[in-house]
Image (cartoon, rainbow, N blue to C red; front, side, top):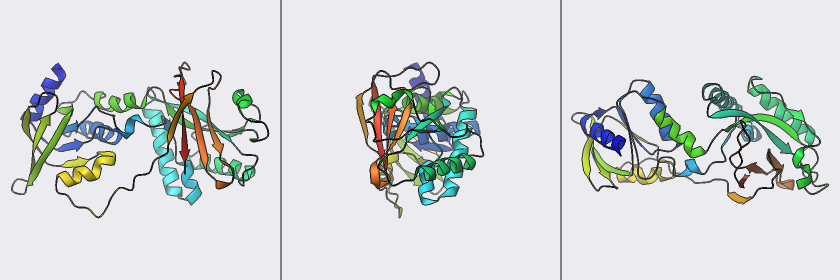
Amino acid sequence: MHNRETNWYLAQQETFDVLIVGGGINGTCLFDRLVRGGYKVLIIDRNDFGSGTSQASGMMVWGGLLYLRNLDLFTVFRLSCDRDAMIRELNHHVSPQFYRYIPSARGDLSPKLVWSALHFYWMMGLFRRRPPRREPSFEEEHLLKPHVHKGSLLYEEAILNTSDCRFTFNWLTSSSVSPAVALNYCTVRGEYSRGDRTWRLVLNDTITGRSTVVRTRMIVNCAGVWADEVNSRFGIETPFRHALSKGVYLAVKRPADHNSLMIFEMGNDRDVITFAPWGLSPFGGRLRHFQKTSKTV
């Protein structure tokens, strides 16, 4: 509560360069970058930080392999570089991790094609990850129905060491530069003054019910699935609207000997399903008692 009082006081006193609406992974990452760049930044969220989509990820850090399907090579290259930068610069939070791709014996994807695609993907990452390899037999093989899948292919991506919420929150606490103000359980409304090119906003604390006026030169909408709602609140019209689409996660009890992240081909529709031990930690093998299963179209 002491930190909240201090941040509330700073919010009243400062004229900020940027106010970020939304404390998920996008908002908190931007907050960290701007603060490190010397800007005065205020970030707010109407709930807990990282409580929206950012707390519902599979904790996987990947380089855009699925974009190879549409031959979007620039996106694959860019995301592979971002993945490797995270491994290099955030090694306390992100670690390399092999993913196990399991071809279907009944699918219409040629194993040779998949094998070639994984090597091309490795090349697109400038060979920074360990090369793909075949592993016909593996620990979890007995969990699978016989004759449905054949062997496995390993390729390296990355994974979060702890939870996705913790990873998001770390962006808020990684810098001690001031003024860097973070306030959750707050709502905001207001308008832009063309005279001094400043937003004057009323900030409401939903815990105590108090309000104050804050000033900022710019607002960045990082509200995720609520971005259109935030735009509407400020009277902002754009030609764009979110078409929300996300994989579905199912939590099932984890077999005691399931320790690797497995990706299965789904027969003839060229789709895949990911079967991941939720909370997998490369540094000590801590596993929660459930696993997330997601389908990616």
